[in-house]
Image (tube, rainbow, N blue to C red; front, side, top):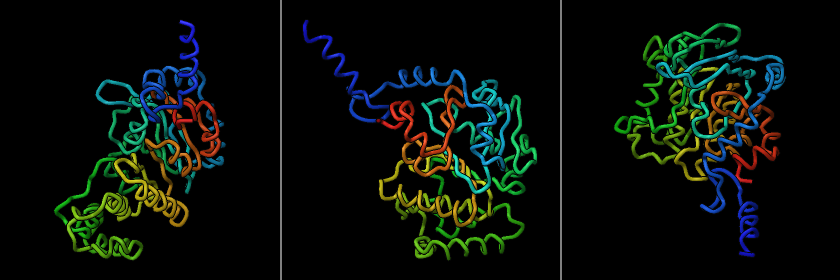
Length: 293
């Protein structure tokens, strides 16, 4: 009996964070959700979000209530991202991270609030018009290449909203000029590509429509570490060299916050915390709950 309390203390000290370590060292999903709820009682004010967007937001969400069918997932949610800026959304499962991307692109029911791009209200625009007119592209988390089509044909599919096939082919050629890895395989079926190459093809296909905003859902999912680094290097190049604005959901919270200019912590469909990516990396609450430290 004398050893009982000591053992409990040791286990408590061993807790490292969500999705890290063995069974004895992991905070359960339920514990993460409960602790995250405590830090979300007073979310960041709108002026803090504006400051993180350098006072010049390009993508703005105000008081958004959205979900699927009659189920509301996002509650009075605000978001601001500047042009050429990157935002990473982290939080426990079911927090509403992907629902934000879905709402921006037009895949959810909007019950209230607004979404605007460069001051233009795009809240109820169709996904097709958001891609064609507002420059928003969505890169899905699932393997979405067409395996029996060639790499080149997959890229052409990305330009299905172009006014003519010649425009799509020209855009595909620009992709090949930028990424020799794809150019070398242009006539190969997409099924022969490695996981990292398929992810590159998915990103590149979205670029054919020359979007200004990239919505990226779980870019590292299912990839080996060397390919994860490659994908983030590609995204960094698109942001810094081509001026893309990136909003990302990333399961690897540490990697996502290392990449992003700013980060939001989502809890129960609301923004619980917001800050610069490197500041959130150093925050002890964020570290313990989401970064395994």
